[in-house]
Image 1 (tube, rainbow, N blue to C red):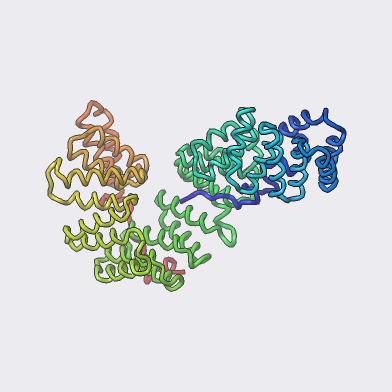
Image 2: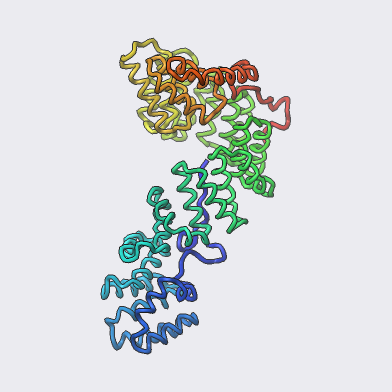
Length: 515
């Protein structure tokens, strides 16, 4: 799941009530702002024409202001103050490129003139040009605590995915962005990106309070709540988006993920079906349904849904790939290989095709060929966590000596999988297994705890943690862990949380049939 940016306006910021973070185009705000007050403080002692221009700007009479500017510049073309006011008046007419030219002329005449710097930075920002950031930094060199400049830089850095710097700027602009849901949204996204989820919840809550009708703000708040391990709060936040018609597709998919994580698979399936009823061409939702079917050892249900999806979205390689993986679960390796070949033919660059083909070979117990498939997948997609994990998993079944090339390859692949996706519980479990085999108790404990942080019901992680703690001085934790493991096994004798029950085949339950 990813966070949603608000729909951008001219300034690339959200535009509730038809305005942006800018204070230059709204002349009344310009007059009231700290930037404007500093600007007028410097121009008031000048000739009377400057006062006339200021009056025209206050009255939003931009034509009159431009006429006076033209007259004065014909007399004194080197007056940077008049050029600055001309930029403001031109911006008021909506001609931002010409306004920027006026500000740039003022800055050539007086490089550190603050009102011109501010006007130019604002206009560059509105135009979406890269020149805004250096101008804003020049403003901060004169006024390090200028909240508006920090707010603009925060937005710029957040849209460049430079979240560490964006958060620093947003933290210095709290009063300014408190009135701007778009800036708060960007701030919240960066906090979530940095795993500061509780803070993200607070910021997204503020954004939603300012703009209660914003679907993206509500969705982002729910996603942050879930990431902060508050699923009940997330579901309450999503309720409005789930119940509306038409429903918000992403909200349905997120709610389904949350419900599945809490064990309410039936409701998760219902929401995914509703999402597909609303939008039968939504490929990601088909893929989620396929994953859920795979996790619950109900491949035929997923295959039926993917079949329907392919009737709605033809030649979609990811659907063929997903169906192929489900077919391997049924043991239909020939049909699975056909689907993988089709996916690869449609999009040779599609990730995981090599991994999936390796999965077929592994299921057929052709381990040597499977290993080569997994290795080829890792070479083709070195930054795919699941490819790295499957290679390490395949190597786990090989006979090898500690310290051997295969042993080192396995550890490297598992570590890379966790590095790429720390939330991949299976990779954390695998690393704990490897470290236990290698006698590295501390690392085994570390990765077992990491797995349990993501999935408290992970029996494999609990078992690994118990075994590892027996080798330490922390044996006092073992009784409670054993009790928890026994409770989980009693509730789920087969030991697989995800497969605690199977989904009903569509043939026996019309509620699970394709929409």
